Structures are given as structure tokens and as C-alpha cells.
Image (tube, rainbow, N blue to C red; front, side):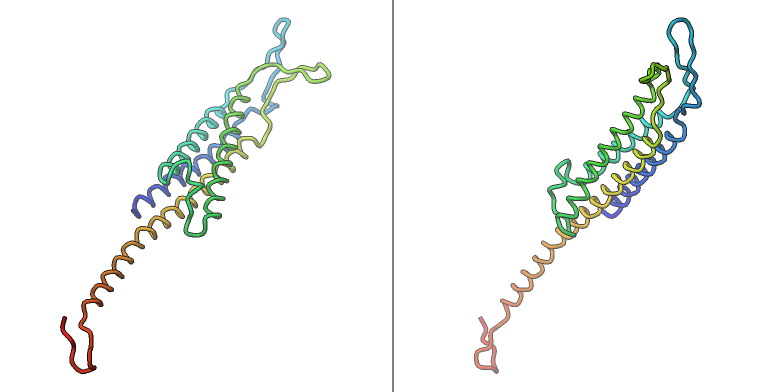
Length: 201
């Protein structure tokens, strides 16, 4: 049980770090406005975008985050884990897993939206009628990476609380069984009738 817990913890933590690293890498390699060129070829202008791995990194980060979410879910009690009490109180455990689900959803949405927006190569027009090339706003991928890492850490906290709770629940029947055996042994002892001689059954 301990080996499984350690392996799950290491795997999920590695995926969380991978999400953050991929998010910051996507942020660093995203196409900047200074790298774009507006070319007038014929009647319609066109945007020339340099190649960038930001979209692939965003997709990889999304897959890592989803995989971490699946591992945590399968290692506990599924999607209803927020309803299971934990040894440190049901409120703390539920808050951790609920916030973990919310933050992971936000991170996935940011990664997917960032990847989709990074693939847009259409020419835009501002309110003054001036043409420009669209670029994703800075901070989207890095924010997604940080939020994804927080989501994984909260999921790990709940997972360890869940394992501890199950371990305590497994030890409780053993303790109760030992107490029952002790009571049975004590009940078979001969009773003292006059203070000197035991009365045999």
C-alpha cells in the first residue's frame, strides 16, 4: 500500500511539474506582435506568422493535466470523492478536491483557448479601420501552468488524506477484534466465591 501511494504521488507530482513547465515554455515561445508581418499581396492583406511550438506545448500540458486528474480520480473513489470524509475533517478534504476540480477545469480551458487562439492567422481590423495581425495576450499560458500545478497539488493533498483515512479505517476493525477476544478470555476466568477458593465452572 505504501509503495502504491508513493508511486502515485511521484507520478502525479511529476505530471504537475510538467504542466507548469509546459505552460511557461508555451508562454516563452508564443508568437509576439513584433514577430508578425502584415503583407499586402493583392487586394487582401495577409499575416505572416513564424513557426512556434506554443500550440503543441499547450496541448501537451492539457494532456498531462487530464492524465493527473484521471490518476487521482481512479486512485480515490471517482468523481464523487468530494463527498467522502477525510481524517482531518470532511470540510478540508472536500474543499481541497472541489477547488482542485475547479482549478483544473480553468487551466484546461486556458490551455485549449490559448492553443486555439495561437492558431488564428486571420487579419483583424480595429475600430479605426487599421489592419493588424492577432496575437494571444501575454500571461495566458503561464497562468494556466500555475493554476494547473495548484490543481494537481490540491489533488495530491486529498489523495494522501484519502489513503490515511482508509488506513485508519482498516486498523479499526482489528483493534475492535482484539478487544472482543480480550473480553472473551476474561469471561472464562473462574469466579471467586469466598475469597480463598475459586469456584470451578
